[in-house]
Length: 73
Image (cartoon, rainbow, N blue to C red; front, side, top):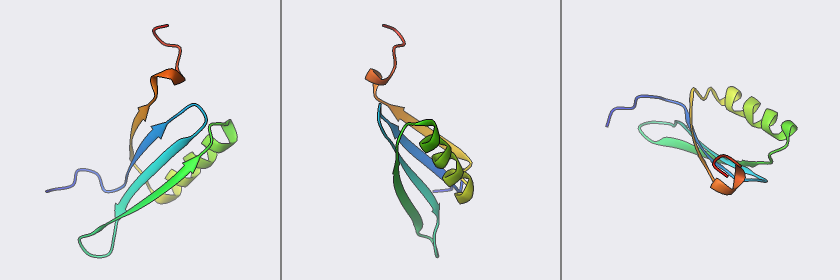
């Protein structure tokens, strides 16, 4: 399988936390996976942003719980 993006992140967003899973090039053909949990305060989200930038992440996919938003209510 050919990779389209080398450094990516999948996020699971909840009301009080964000779990981020970053996939990076590893040694050889294997990929490295790093999982980290952040809070949802502005300070925590800025730390998440800094962490993703430091790892060189270029693309993020987000899943969120519907109870975290008032859209459609």
